[in-house]
Length: 254
Image (tube, rainbow, N blue to C red):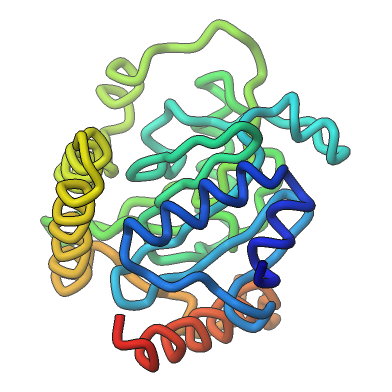
């Protein structure tokens, strides 16, 4: 077992690591090897896909498991101003989230305003570090601010408006990703691996198209300077990991 799968097996379980292995295989992309090709954390791992403008987040399946790791949080999945994955693949203890790459990093005031809007909707954006937010480029050229790292948010209570009500209130900057969600869901619902691989190939080609249009952006290769004028370590790490993984993919001709 390589280092990547070994880490996942240790963090979650062997069956969860094998689910990740099989998903990478059906997606047609190589597994990362050493730490230089992905980012490892207490909650799981991040793999950056330059070619497709995607981030694969592998995290605990639910918040009860995260409490085993010493974290007490809830994954916010139902607000238009908190970035949602395009799709998710579940294993016994982990979830693979296929996330859109967007412009990461805002100014301090924008991050605070996001926090104010979310608080009115029953969500605490408790870690308002500007690199935890970013922008989604809209078809009309607008840049709409959203929280990028959902683990920097949690629910304040159990009484919250529905997604459609929130979208009517704030707009839905993530609606442009709906065709990608539909393509991914279609692929994962195929009855055999051959059809699934073919449909996932179409999904990835659509991601490349979205990237060419500027809606998916590998901003980890941009400036690592944050809103405070300092170098953001995580952005630098992401850039190095993405470049190392892309080099591996090219060497394997995938």
